[in-house]
Amino acid sequence: MKLFPDKKYNLILKYVIAAILISLLLVLALFRWDTVKSVVSVIIGIFEPIIWGAVIAFIMNPIMTSTEKFLNRFIFKKKKRPGLTRALGVVFATLVFIAVLAAIILTVIPEIIANIPGIYDGLRYDLIPGVQRWIEKLLADNPSIQGIVSNELSDIGSTIQQLLSNIVPHLQNLLTSVFDFANSVKNFVFGIIIAIYFLLSKENLKAQAKKFTVACFREETYLWLFKFISDTNSAFLKFIYGKVIDSIIIGILCCIGMLILNMPYVMIISLIVGITNIIPIFGPFIGAVPGAILVLIAEPKKVIWFLLFIVLLQQLDGNVIGPKILGSKIGLSPFWMLFSIIIFGSMFGIVGMIIGVPLFAVAYDLLNQQINEKLRVKNLPTDDAFYEKAGTNIGKAGESLPENTEKAENTEAPTGLEDKKQ
Image (cartoon, rainbow, N blue to C red; front, side, top):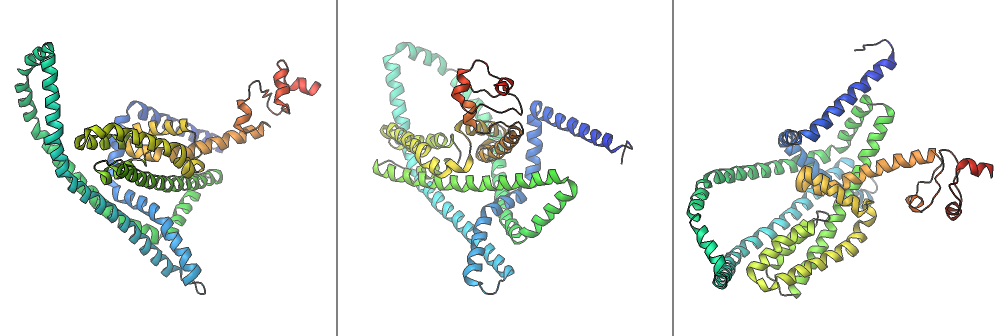
């Protein structure tokens, strides 16, 4: 429905309405983020199986594509069979995904179960008695502290009663968490099934999405959207697969180093360190905490050596291994990586910390392209190094720049007009 006979005014009205809606959404997100987050959580809960399916299909797609290329090159070289090739590719990708998932579960779960008695014994016979002896010695050596503790002991009974009265709500929360976990497992299983259908009808779904986008948007807009989706897909693939390879290497190196240092709980700590290493920058510190606690329970004297080893391992990863694998894949400086992790992590937790870097990398690249395009229109250089030089004469839009930066530094306040006169 058109409100004005002139198309120009209708277009202006659309832009005004869009600007108002975007402003309202931004204000709502800034000042009522908890409400927005709860609404998003409900929506994600409803579509969780489909989200899992999309994520799993995204992971399985390169395996399926590689399998199809292999079959077309060596098996169906003379006569192409796209339907059979796709089916075999999906089957192989599904088997690989399930095999990797089963290998992780069969490695982690038995290791945790096997170490539970040792952790319990360490707490009961080593750590707790050691802490008790330390407290007794501290109180014996400091009578003033002992008097303060004695005065506070009278409040312990009431505190214990209060804690016992709060156990029932915590048990209810625990039961709710168990049901939530079971529901997540169910959604994950459905996600695998949905991912198979995604992959089998990938071209058809892509065509439908393109058809819808082209029908609803102008050429300039849908071309930008296609490029954005392509860049996002490329950034995620490079980052996720590169980070997984990096984390596997770190987990193996952690296992080897702990075996050499004769540390306890080698396998479970190496798994924790490797898995948490997927989170950029903060992952190594997150993984070091539970590892240090486990070492402290089993052999307290080795916890310092463990922390030193983790610091050295992460320095090796941050300065040698990580840049070799991910250095050219993201294109973000350490500052912007830290910025994206903090922002997305505060908004979406652990998931935000993982996906924040590739998402911000795509947004950063698009913004950088727009800036470079505007600089080219003004006949200005696009290289960052040019703007780092002290005393560089940038000049006015459309005017030529001095060929020699050193000459510009020696000239007092030169301008483009002065260059033309010279």
